[in-house]
Length: 314
Image (cartoon, rainbow, N blue to C red; front, side, top):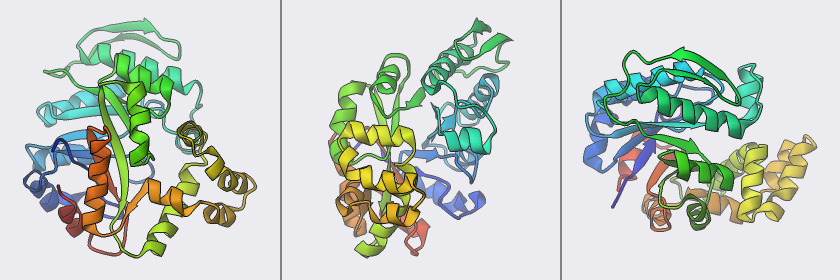
């Protein structure tokens, strides 16, 4: 059936509480654990722990921003994860967003495409054990060499939404990680990416309370799809007109109106909700349409999250 991933740590839960669940994942049919990095746990520490709790699952960052760590530090963290996981680690990198980079980390969010490209090129050299002295377009590295480069090839995947980044991922990386797309959007993304691995974080809300699921979905969509990169992504996917009232209300500072303006059909396209069996089947649709690695991002429903992860196993 291919790969089947889960996003961890789960929302509102301590990293250390995940140990028992992580030991079960491979037996349940999960092949991957992917982390995220916003305002909760960092992207690397939970995976270092999971590597000790499960000797089988693949581990990946989705994603580590290319601005918030220096290139050399990012290379060292990736090499360390490869070592402690016995080469089961995939480094997912991306530009992140102005809020994370500028507002929270006090860094300039300049030329995100070039910064991501340059970081990818540096990492490929450094993780291969090369001594790097090179002037890239967005930074310069002088004389860096990893003391302990990975023993095997360490895959690097790019967070990619639109054609330029998808093509870069296809040409120079080991695949692409995407986010906030519907199952029927996958062929459009796949057309630009070609045959490289495509991982997709899929928001899953296992509840038959349709109103509650849509209310949570509208809140998340109005928060994320007003970010310029995501707005442009959905314009490219053909949702520009459907999302314009939401974006205009958000730009005017009226968040309640922005939430209300998200159409139900858009929520239903971007948030998987319903019974556990229905949700599992919908995630499988992403696979059928071209996603190699679906990554479930479990949204809170009030039910026990660990039990839901078990129930959503393939």
